[in-house]
Amino acid sequence: MASSTKQIDAPPPGATAQNQLAQNQVPPLTGYNLFLADRTLTQAIDREGAVWAREQLTELGRLLGTEEAQRWGFDANENLPVLHTHDVYGNRRDEVVFHPSYHQLMRTSVENRLHSLPLVESKKGAHVARAALLMLTAQNEAGHTCPISMTFSAVAALRAEPELARQWEPKIVSRVYDPGFAPAEEKQGALLGMGMTEKQGGSDVRANTTRAERIGGSREYLITGHKWFCSAPMCDAFLVLAQTPKGITCFLLPRWTPTGERNAFYIQRLKDKLGNRSNASSEVEFAQAWAHLVGEEGRGVQTIIEMVNHTRLDCAIAAAALMRQALLQAVHHARFRSAFGKLLIEQPLMRNVLADLAIESEAATLLMLRLASSFDRRETDERERAFCRVATAVSKYWLCKRSPVHVGEALECLGGNGYVEESIMPRLYREAPLYSIWEGSGNVICLDVLRALAKEPVAGEALIAELKSTSGADKRLDAYVARLDHQLISKAGNGPLHGYGAAEYSARELTEKLAFALQASLLVRHSSPEIAEAFMSSRLEGQHGQNFGTLPANVTVASILDSLPAL
Ligand SMILES: Cc1cc2nc3c(=O)[nH]c(=O)nc-3n(C[C@H](O)[C@H](O)[C@H](O)COP(=O)(O)OP(=O)(O)OC[C@H]3O[C@@H](n4cnc5c(N)ncnc54)[C@H](O)[C@@H]3O)c2cc1C
Image (cartoon, rainbow, N blue to C red):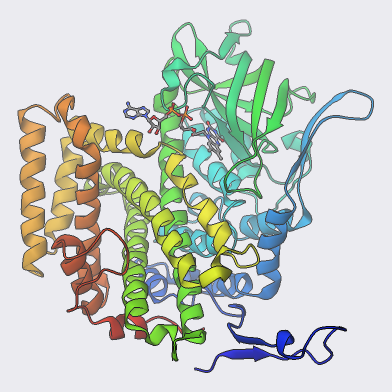
């Protein structure tokens, strides 16, 4: 493939014609279909019975690959949300104003039901279909998917309060994006957020000091306190945790009270944050804000955990999406850019790097899709429920830890251009580490893996059963799984996991091994023999260095790279 050269006809005064030539630069990666270009995704849709979503995926994949939709992502990140605490007369306003491109992104995602598909669609594979839609969207612009994800996830927790769910769900599942700031009854669609983290404690929500006082004998309360992080504060309502005399409790706190007044929800300031910049994240205070109880008083963590589990799934999906987009950008660049007399993609060491990134991306996509399928199946299959319990934590931890490293390597493939804002790479790079802190940071998630294994032995059994389903396909994988099985049994049976004190120290190591084994087993089942073999020899056999681009010599890099789409 030839490199591209752009000629500008009339150089400005003083410039030489030579300076106006963009020689050996790469054509922009635009005008492609993100879905059709992704074989792992298209195959998964067929395999999981979600063929019914193909048309929608194809259309969204096309739209998001257009220059116009790519521009939305850039504009929404270059024109940051603005907080208006007061109006000109000094009245509280507490509104955030977004760029029109942000609204366009939100509208596209809501119309595509990224915030609700499995809630309204009873066909097979609805979670997998939604995961694929989110995978496409997060490659284009991930910031706005925060409120989309929270809205989707909140419903699972909201259903602990059936009357409230009955009132809110029709607005939540609506296909109309309605950004107006008005009581939800007056709107055509509603979005939900979440407020758990306080200044004195985020992971340890038991440290929450925000208090809820009951109004008479009802299920209505007045909440006073703060949240140190509250993303997407223009959502219509929030699931928040607050203390009652019975302990931490979950509430639904809307922006407007049932009597049609602005609730006492005060946005103090917006966070100036690393990534996710198109989306607003705020600090808020509540001064006797009206809220409705969700679930049982004193069991707030148990109530909100269903929301948390769904957002963890979305973190895994988004992490895989960032890796995929970074890979596409890197390979595209290497196919057009020459150095030292050859295209970069012909340089042996670059081939090692790109193939290694491709293996990681494929393993990530397969893992998040398998997780999504367990969300589909867990309602009717007890083993899938148990698998989902532990696989959510394993996948969330591993993919969110891998994506910053992966994206960081991929941007170097673009040379200096990868560090310049006009390429999408800096945005991907800033976004990647956030998924690791959200919804349970790295350590907290690994401790959750231990908790799942110790408290629900069926979860470990389901995981091992899944791994053994590929028994006989590869001796290295069989041996790896046998060692893991032994490790889990001995820990669960003899103590450390059974109270998991001592096991805490090694929780990351165990989680990492479980993730490796799951990815290897999925690659054996669903990927090309070349990629599966490369994963085994590099990741399972340990013939791999600390960085990408350290694949051993036996890997058939040519077939791995040839399988990537030429865009
Ligand atoms: C951009 C952004 C948006 C956010 N949006 C929201 C939101 O909308 N709603 C919301 O509720 N929160 C939100 N958060 C907050 C986020 O969920 C918390 O930051 C996170 O849960 C960690 O809490 P913390 O900041 O209090 O850190 P801490 O809980 O103090 O943790 C600090 C470190 O200690 C580690 N650690 C904690 N406990 C243990 C342990 N037992 N063993 C070993 N290590 C441990 C953690 O892994 C972490 O690395 C947002 C954060 C960011 C960055």
